[in-house]
Amino acid sequence: MKVLTKKTDYAIRALLMLAAKKGNYVSTKTISAEQDIPYQFLRGVLQEMIRHGLITSKEGVQGGFMLEKDPDEISVKQVMEIFQGEVQVSECMFRKQICANRSHCVLRHEIMRIEQVVNDEFQKITIGGLLGKLTAAKSAKPAGNESYKSASAKP
Amino acid sequence: MKVLTKKTDYAIRALLMLAAKKGNYVSTKTISAEQDIPYQFLRGVLQEMIRHGLITSKEGVQGGFMLEKDPDEISVKQVMEIFQGEVQVSECMFRKQICANRSHCVLRHEIMRIEQVVNDEFQKITIGGLLGKLTAAKSAKPAGNESYKSASAKP
DNA sequence: TTAATTGACATCAATTTAGTATCAGTTTTG
DNA sequence: CAAAACTGATACTAAATTGATGTCAATTAA
Image (cartoon, protein in one colour):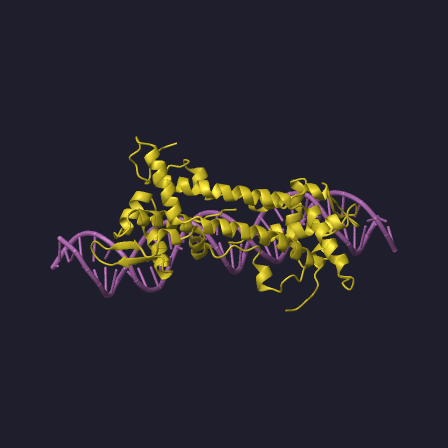
């Protein structure tokens, strides 16, 4: 079971770059190169985020993308919902009748509780918060001049 | 994002039936009919659970499946792991190098925390516990004689 | 004018999920 | 014994999701 899909993963990394370079337009090419994300795939991810109002764009030379919202107002949960839909127990229970099956019903109750915890936690994690921890970690290591881009470390 | 797949869902329902009829062999046909689970699909699920030591079987007429372990010793987490694998943040991070990308690394740390909470919670939910709540709910409603099988309630 | 860029799609391949089918072997029961 | 009710073990198929690529038009800065 995977918590984050590639799209969510890439989206968060792109948002972190945009948050770091707030006020400037950053091109898909730049993000793709720095984060090692497939170019065309990333384009789709960015366009999806425009549709959901997280970022804006400027076409043409020197164009690119910019954050539309305050980084502290963008939660990981929001991004997950865009690319993965809401967290839910088991699809069928919402499409069919609720609790037609009693065993399901009892289990559902337990899992809804966990769902709530997960949602609350992902809601708390914001782009602004992550960026803060990122820069804090960076400045704590004076030798590292790598920003948060791909460190090209081979295993 | 779906927390439980059909296989996990069906497996838990089947285990609840076996726990309720402890000591008796219950056939796939019976479980399939009572829980409204596709027969052949359920067979695969049950065989998978044999391989993982949760249940045993008896072939031939009057055969079927029986719990191998104490219902309190079977957690929903165990069942999820059989059919969905372990909860993990994002596939790639484990296959490739850890924390080659710093932004990923910070995010990963946060999500690992949530993962831990989710795992702990699913570990706490057991077949025995669910069955207890089930029978408690049943006896609280004297009118209902439906056990926990499909209540054929149309929406 | 040209190169760099996004907008809007269309398409594709791989993987996962859900479900079906078949045949061989075992066991109870008439 | 023979038939019926079962599981064991696979093989297969279809649909949905995920991950990725390609193309062409429109826009904009230099």
